[in-house]
Length: 327
Image (cartoon, rainbow, N blue to C red; front, side, top):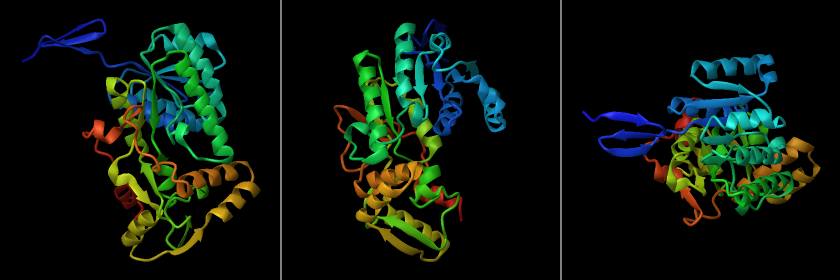
């Protein structure tokens, strides 16, 4: 039986040397995608740290989430993006930093970049992306502004020479599958009577379950093939048009839905006339379902790799399978 010997940051098995599994810090771990990253990191065997504001535990829902982290063996660290001392102290304990901060804090990631440079030990930084490729997006309105900020963070990371991976997770299943692509409605279960479809419904999008996004991300953090690359989570069974997704649901419930098609002109009007968040969501719908932001360009092998090809051992949940839970 091969002998395993550990020495510092390497592990030797029968004379072969491999890099030790990375220690991961998640910043923004109580947010929507953040909690999946924390849990995915811990469950994949990475020594996991979550940097949280102390105020997080005063919220009953977040306190319960934090207790769940602790039950998984996650190391809870308290600090803040505005407290450089706590930020640097946390970063010095890990090898990989994953940021999942919300849209309003995207530009504050410059503070993480500065802290990473000061700490001097980070092997990989994954900034708060987890969506479209912002460098190749055709989005407009509020979404365009958000993507421009994310692109600004990318350029700052690259200018500082920090090793990175940008994760393009595409659409979150929790928002898009349950609503049959009507993400602005925030439905918990798919409709059984009628559905609104943007454009003619033929533009393909990519929808992934959040746990799968985390699983692919954890595979990538120590992989040299994803170093300084974009990681596209584009599993083939999850590349579907709205028409195809609605048809899958109709087959499961045994009835046809009444369909209303919202064409680009009407959607543009809604973007212009709607208040803040709603305008943002309509802008996102325009990018996804009119402009085809997720599928209009393929993966450029000089700058990107595709997750399901790199990691065929990850058994991802298809959109079809995800819809089964609602029947």
